[in-house]
Length: 294
Image (cartoon, rainbow, N blue to C red; front, side, top):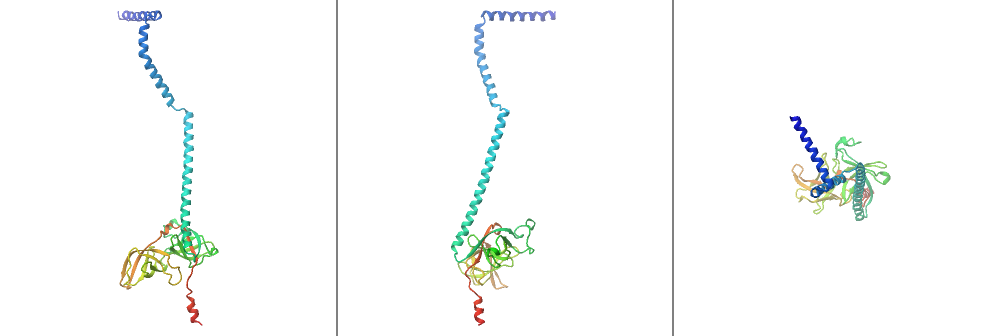
């Protein structure tokens, strides 16, 4: 019975389908088809638009290749601009440094000078493991410059940097290089004075790289922040080169003198270029001995 009932439904469906086909061909279903078209057409158009948009948004392999090439080109262009910007900044820094040194030379026409670059530093400015060819004396604070005897450089000549700041003195020289003993070296001794009060003393270095102004009389008034310059006593240095500022003051009862801790006017680790003063007006102290010998 079930099998016969199933065949009956199939026959009904086939008959209904055949009837609808005949009615459609005869035009009897035209009103119904029009209504269905009004409902289905917008949905069909929307679906088509979505499919077209999705297709437009999906990049092809050619598009991806073109995008990658454009990104590579822009990256290379950006790298070139960065490198050029770095070069321009370096040129600007060098130009400003040269201008300061030129100003110093113009302000001191009585001094003869030679310019040089710093090519190495003493191992105690950095860790010894980072410096090749350090000096055998671990406490010697020095820089090496690329100017030597063939440029007129000799032992004892003062070395300065921008702003009339004293760096040190030439301790050794070869044809093309020179060792400069920095002013904060333990063996360095520089006659100095306070710029405003003209109080005199002696600048000495230390193994730690600190500087102290010693031999200041106990009744002299020394203020923190006072500028310290060279005094030219002894004739070894021109007067007025800047050394630093007073950082603190202490009285040494055992020595009956005051001492002033000195803050350097420059960072020795940042030195790149210097000027060697090859000649300056200085009194001939041997003149007195010559007169006495007559």
